[in-house]
Length: 111
Length: 113
Image (cartoon, rainbow over all chains, first blue to last red):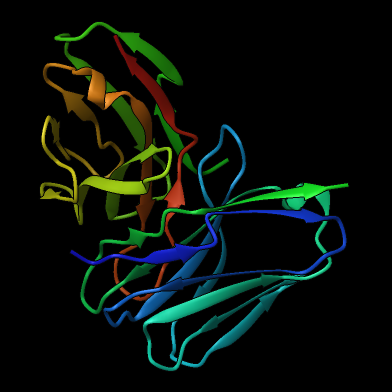
């Protein structure tokens, strides 16, 4: 089946540092989504990407849809303690209503 | 506030018992989904429904069943629970057509003993 390889699995950083995480796949996808999950809650959408090469920002977050349509990255600049959580990439192929999720990147920010 | 409501929030269940996890959304979304989340495995799709009256199997459907009698409700049933079904279960929904994002409930933490 379709698989998304998300890395790194976990990150421990100091407040103020920049963060980068990515997802890759051997399959081509039409959509890349990035979600954040806080403890005890469901994932919340951060950024949605719908075109190859698209670069989108949401505050301190920036994400890009890879040109090959097989990868995406998420950057967080100047991290703050509330950035702590698990970040998931998700994607779907053309005509499919089913989203496939990466295994997540757990981010810890030390103040 | 519009959104997805899951119930119960948590449950401890004896193996072999039947359990239905409830999910209701008031956003009039056509598509609904059930995921389970396990440490190190991320979110895996159990079952989904593109519209009322239709359902489909996801990545890990065995041991689970769903129904979609109307647009708002999408219950997930474990006919005879087993310990490997201990997990956090998330219901989600979205509008079909176009590129609408997935909205998640806050999850049900299920422990099967």
